[in-house]
Amino acid sequence: MQLQQMQDEIARLRGVVEVQQNDIQRMKQEALERYQELDQRIASGTAAPATNNSQPSGGAIDASGAPSASAAQAPAAGTEPPDPAKEKLYYEAAFDLIKAKDFDKASQAFTAFLRKYPNSSYAGNAQYWLGEVNLAKGDLQGAGQAFAKVSQQYPKHAKVPDSLYKLADVERRLGHTDKVKGILQQVVAQYPGTSAAQLAQRDLQRL
View 1 (cartoon, rainbow, N blue to C red):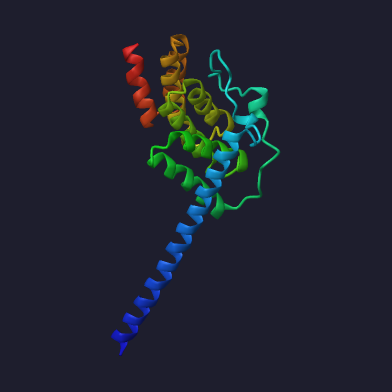
View 2 (view 1 turned 60 degrees about the horizontal axis):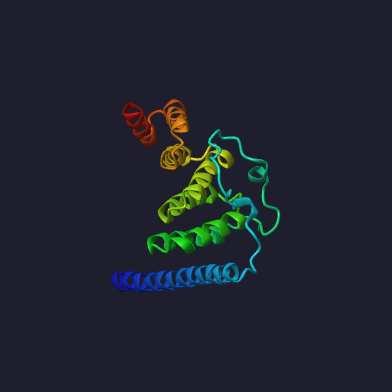
């Protein structure tokens, strides 16, 4: 009798899990559709400009850690009250675009996420991955600015050492060799024991 009850309970729990998985998949699909709609609006020129994430047209990237006036301002329009469950789904939908190697849409998705949820617990990660996506696209200016913003806007985030190390790599690719050493030394001095510090120390020895 007990065995039958256990089997019935297992079957019931499997049904619950299946329903939950279907709900999660549906919500992810809805999030992706929202991003696709955003892509269409951007392509048609009807989407509001992402002033907080706009890239400079040229010049060196500010690696000092001091945000510019525009970068320091929190976006007022388009933000929503905290909703961790929704934020997680939106973040995962954007990350799924990286897995699919759709870097253009991933860049737009992370930019939209940061504009919508600038204070989310996922915002630091989203800012870092925006840098990685832009780097994969070959957008060095965009990548550098995204990596710099991690330390500027989320100075206590776990991704700061990695973002600074990546920023040094971007500066090297841009030919700003005078900045590379300073950033690498900052990583070693401020974040000892991290993998980023180990890589930075190795690169310093090669300079």
